[in-house]
Length: 430
Ligand code: URA
Image (cartoon, rainbow, N blue to C red; front, top):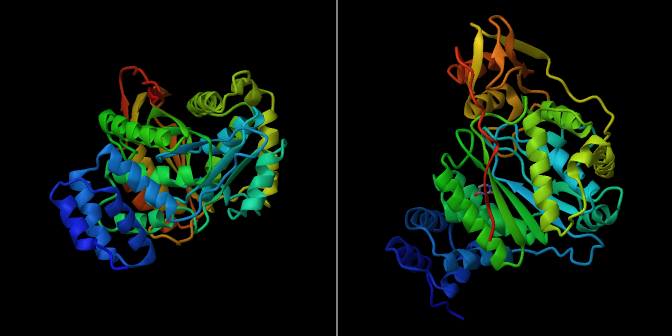
């Protein structure tokens, strides 16, 4: 059958501000997945969407077409309710590591398909791969087995090639055509993967601030609302927390450094902001899963979450007791003066960690597991001149000047005490 559509007519319609109908959307996503719509045509359409936006109806149909470009998993037959969390990405954001086993310890099943880092934000899979033996690739039957096992209950793994393949191709194009920062394109990209993953409920952690995609709260609220609506339209119970990302989370940014910090949290310690956000997200996830009688703070404190962490790592070939990789070189940056730390910029720290080798410049590049930045002070902490502020870790000492440059102006020490703003800024529910 000869199609009544052409890529040019769809691009021109969106360019001129017209609403695309269901047939046009289904045709263009299907054509792009099959290679009938060329990369340059999809890039032009992405730019038209960037400028013109999408209506709620267009966005719901676009997301549905992206899901239908591949397989949709189904975990409705599991003995426990499924719930997942997705973060829009930040610096030092290791929350998935303690959160997934914690929520599993409280009775839910957590099927989490995660990504690798690109640019200044880290990726959960890169962090977990720093654990000797741990593998990101898991088959669907293995996933099902881990989720059904009451001792495990959580799986964090790489998405297979058949999960929303249209998104994989489109994201790669957006990355090189200046069209990543479009609210409908981000919302449909994230939600197509999360809905296809087969979770019944979802909690979104939408980051706001200097180290996030969304630099201000209004844009974050718009993105969160679009994603919550998409979840509701697809029958996935979804809520979003808007959380602060001006300052890195916790005291480490970098793969193995963040795993070590997550293990501290699972052992009942760790930085207060990481614990606070982990428990807040766990409460939301358990409520969405219909589990109202569990206390996640208690499950962290009494070691139940740690037991699930060990079982989850071992089920994917990892040795939870193994020594984590450490970088060969360290460099300590000291405070030039006394006072109070008033600012520690997430973007500067993320960029420094990336330059030290914790992140990658291109997809497929290797990362240094031991590389990153350790933060000895955070905003609000008193500082004494000469004390260590930041330790840089790397195997490539020639990277240190670039990291120091990224950190220039990224922190401030003032004379007066400061009030540290809350981590959870808002909550968006359907
Ligand atoms: N993460 C995604 O998966 N997609 C986006 O578009 C942005 C962040």
